[in-house]
Length: 399
Image 1 (cartoon, rainbow, N blue to C red):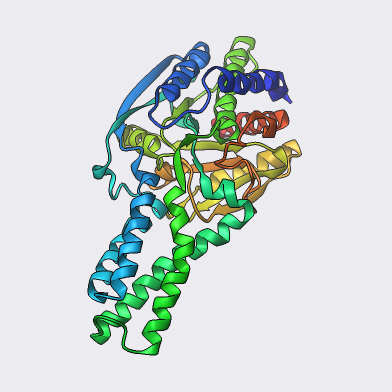
Image 2 (cartoon, rainbow, N blue to C red):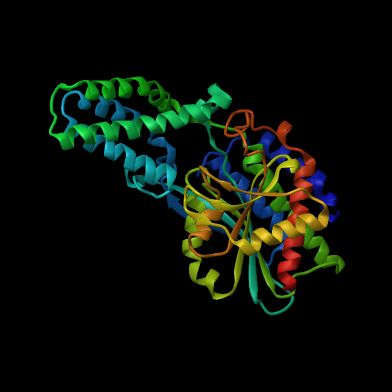
């Protein structure tokens, strides 16, 4: 495989960034330092490299959890005193959770401080007329540590499900009392049972106050390894053009390192919105790399359910065909909770696909925890991902 030539470079890139820069909070100086390093690394392959500044509220996406816990407790108390008020407060809690966290809408961002993020975009012009565009992207930032995931490990998923259930029970119980005209202390057994259920389920809600703190994880696989593949692709394009092995004929290639994915896809949203007219002027395809860890779990995603994004069937099929041609095992799946930057483009009607090399069948101990270190990143995962992207690019350029 041609990608094997860049394996050591990509792995060393991950190691160097972890040692020299470390964790990279969204919109932080560390994230900007990595962006500048990426710009330097991809520049020899590019006709131009742009650093685009934007503003967002990176703390809003998950920073609301402690406040939501407090609101839940208030609504639970009000259930026994004033069910109408309980219904209103619990609905507010549910709406914030649904729109801000589940659907990735910037629902309460105006309540949080704004900061500046920087997207890095390197453009590689084709040898002929530009007739299409391929964006290959990964994100610069690393996640805040999800404490519940670190503490509970595999039990975190059912604990979170019960936490969400608690809010639904509270809304339903408050609604039932409000509709029936019940007020003050519950007057029948059914309402007392619901009240006991609300109190019992609060055990699963309270830990959400510590769901994430200011601790930022190293982010080796998520998504520094993806950034390393992006840098490896730049090296391949430079070398292939100089040797005459391959140069895009009619395809403009954009090497896109995005800020603030962990803050709710804010960098991807800003890039897609800023360039929407340009992206739709010619056929544009996005290949998004995330969680590059183990090639045995090479996966292409068809949908990202939380955001409602349907990823491009043509690109999914292309990834499968290229994987088969190379003898790679690949599966298709959906992302039931959470999202990748591909969502921001797919929802803007830009064909996009998300590619991972990570076991999504269960909650892995290094996902969004302090264990996301280089020891979990297999060099072969970098090689397989780069080869897949190179061959997808070649196919798209020929078609």
